Length: 557
Image (cartoon, rainbow, N blue to C red; front, side, top):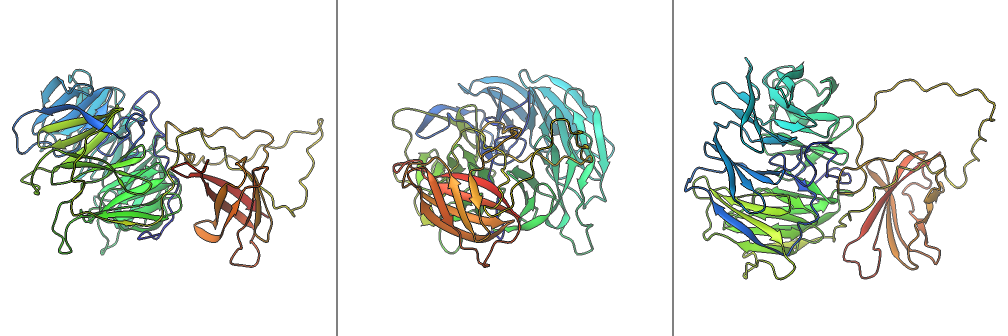
């Protein structure tokens, strides 16, 4: 898996989120939606792109440090000591308000939330349409420490030195407060999928809380005298949580249990979308791999071996492209499948960060936004020729592995199907019509909803039908027969896993009935009993540019 010692999940980053609030095509935190996945789903943001507007707000060299938010048709910029709203379509200034920021903004349901006042950490809410202050509250131990709040579903989540709190976005009232084990035990910028809140903890761990009640659902190991302190931020994508700590280490954890799975190789907050994970290595290299299988894809490296040269900023995914700014004044878009240069615009000259000039990228509401100092340039899709750097990306070196499958936006994947092996005993007959009803199962804690295998609007899992025709059957010898409705001779690759361990793989072609027989040749002579996941990859037609991927759950008894 390249540098990652873990298997990622399907990156359904489009938002589990926010009924009645922000959608997955809006940037409500500095890392995208409230999941902070670094990915925006907006079907209108595809190259070629051209400049839609170019605005310089004021000649302030110490200005926009955080990426802007884009929501509700407006762009929100923290510029020096001002909070400014611009029209996303035209760049025209709508309103401006003097604010003393101590952390990045967050947005939800027509409101902006900011931590203000350097001395007291005051949480303040503003009307996003007008900039008028709605409420402001101060707490004895502060609202946050070394972090930013995150809002979603009408609530604002913030991590104070000794507690995690949820505030009512409309009134500022504390909805719940859960104490932590100490100021260095649980600390940092949270993320939320609407059901849970994920907070960084010490030693590359996370703590998970019920978003509605504040009940702590997972408890990380207690920090020790030699622990690495908590801090950083979390991001949710598929069934994984990614935690970027203050030492720029990227940890990968299981979303349901909070169990730490491994350490990713990047040094920035990753972007996970459309089935691909993109992260940055020490500013000079971007790396991409499949978030489904961990298959290593492409690398793009700039500069010399001595570490000098133009740098990349944190990537942001929009549809099938990863966008990043460079410190030599470029905005570039790299295709998720193979890393080729899909878009490039040269906006400034020179090769230096220069004071506080740290370029950043935002996306949403149909635009990709490049920001440097107080200058904002918005790009929008055009049917004709787009912007071009002419000289491409100088000093860049591409290293291509496998072409990565990019998940198409489409119907929600069906629920997991339990498939008995072909040689299993027949199922028991259904009960008689006059039989007494079965006793209800014991109550159980409902786990968080796992996203379907797609990137797009809110993914919903349908209730299983009473009778399901399984797409695959399996034998203990590892022979899988799948009816997939594919065109004859379509090439299919299958990878069979038990948990995160690959137990076999095979390639075959579909027959005239659209069936595929895969002999996965398990490393053991026979498949052990248990649950397996079959990941199949194929192209819908010989001329398709990208591959389609499906996951099928198999139970062998």
